[in-house]
Length: 380
Length: 219
Figure 1 (cartoon, chains in turn orange, purple):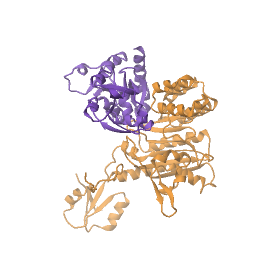
Figure 2 (cartoon, chains in turn green, blue):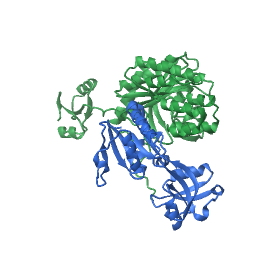
Figure 3 (cartoon, chains in turn orange, yellow):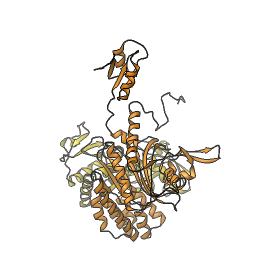
Figure 4 (cartoon, helix red, strand yellow):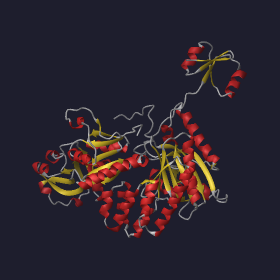
C-alpha cells in the first residue's frame, strides 16, 4: 500500500464547497438567520475551541464521544473543537450574559466538527444554524422554539417538513417507578432505541407491559396523545405528558402546515435533555434536518432553557439547485461608471482582462450577457 | 427516499423467503407472477397494492437498503440485523419465521469446553461484528476471519479452531465433525423499518406494521 496523499484527497467526511453551492449555502444561512433575528433572537459568535470541561458540561455531555480534543500548549489543559454550538451559547448565557434580562433569546451560525460521521451522512464538518431561548420554563417557550424553527424551514422553501416530539425523561421515570435496576434499564433502553418489541417483552413483568404500550403508542401526534391518555403513568411522567399535549395544541394553531408525530420513547442524543425535545425530518431528506429541546444550562443547577439547531448541509441538499445568476461580461475599456451603476442594479459583472474575442470569451466564462458600449445583449 | 413515492419492501433471497411469502399473503400482499419465476432477472416487483413495491436482494443487504432509505420496510434475519447494527433501523416486529440459532462451534473434543478461560480466540465467521461484540462482553478478544460461506470447513482446514455460524438442525455441523460449544442468540426474522420513513410517513408505515403483526399472530 502506498503512503502517497493524493492532491485532491481530503480526510474522510470533509469537502470543498464549489460555486454555485458555496454561495447558495451562505445565502441559506443568511435567510435562516434573518427569520431568527426577526423573532427577536440576537446573534452571538463563540470561538471554535473551548476548554473541554465547559464544552461538555450539561446537555453538551451528549457530544463527548463526538468531540475532537487537543492539548492547549498555552494553558496545558485539554481543549475541544466544538461538535455542537448549543453548549457554547448556554455557557455565554450563564457567564457573560448572566445579568442580561430573561428570557434571553440568542441565535448562532457556524461550523462544527465531529470525530465520526454518521452512517447516513459521512460529513464530519457540519454547518449549524440555531436559536436558544434561555431562562424560561414556560410552555410558551417550548411552543416558540418549535414554531420559530418551523417558520425558518418554511422560509427557505423546505417542503413536507415534520417534527417528531419526544419526552426523554419518560422512560427513565417509568423504569425507576417500576423498580428496574440499572442493568435492566440499560437493556430496555437498547431495545427501545431499536423499537425491538420482542426484546422489550423479554424484560418481563409490569414494566414490559407498560413500556410495550409506550412503544406501540408512537405515531401522529393526535393518535399518540389519545393512546397515551389511557395509560397509568407515574405522576411526574403524567405531568410531562400533559405539557406535551398543550404544546401540540398550540403548535398546531400557529404552524398548521407542520406535520407532528410523537415518539414517547425516542432518546437518541437526548440523554441529557430535561423536557420536551424534538427532531425535524423531511420526506426528501434522509436523516435529521434539525433537533432541539429543553435542557439546563451549566451543570445541573443551571437555568431552564430550550432551543433548536438546524443542519444546513442537509437542508441545502433537499432544496432545488440555485437558479443560475445573470453574469454580465464587461469588455476591456468599458465605461467604469456605467459598470458600477449596473452592479448597483444587481448585475454581476465579469471584467475582461484583455481586449478582443468578447462574445466567445463571455461564453467561456459562463456569462449570460455581454456589454457592448452601453447596451446589454443576452447570449443564448 | 429520493422521490420514491411508493413504499418499497426489501425481501431476502434464500432461507427466509420461502416462509416470508405465505406470511405476506396473509398480510394481504400478492406478488406479481414474475417474482416466483426462477428464470426472472428482474429485481423490483409490483404487488397488488398500488403503493407498495417489493425488491429481492441478498439477505445481508436488506438492512443496508433499509438503513439508507432505499427501501422503507424490510424482512431480515436477526443475525443480519445484529451484524449491521444501524441507528437508522427500527425492528418493531418479530415475525416468528426463519427460526434458527447463532452458535459458537468447534471440533468434537471442544464439547463442553469453557471458553471463558481464554483471553484471545480466533474465529471464522460470516458475522465478525456480532462475534467481536459477543466475546468482548466476556472479556475475550476475538480475531475474526470473515468468510462468506462454507464456514464449517474452517476448523478442518486449519483456518481457525472455532467458528460462529447459524444452525437450524445441526446436521451441517455434524457432517463436518463439529459440535456446538455455546449459543450466542436465538434468531428469528424481523420486520424492519427505516427511521425517517416511520417519522415522515407514519400512517402508511404503521398500517403495514399492523398488517404484518396480524399475519404473524395468526400463524
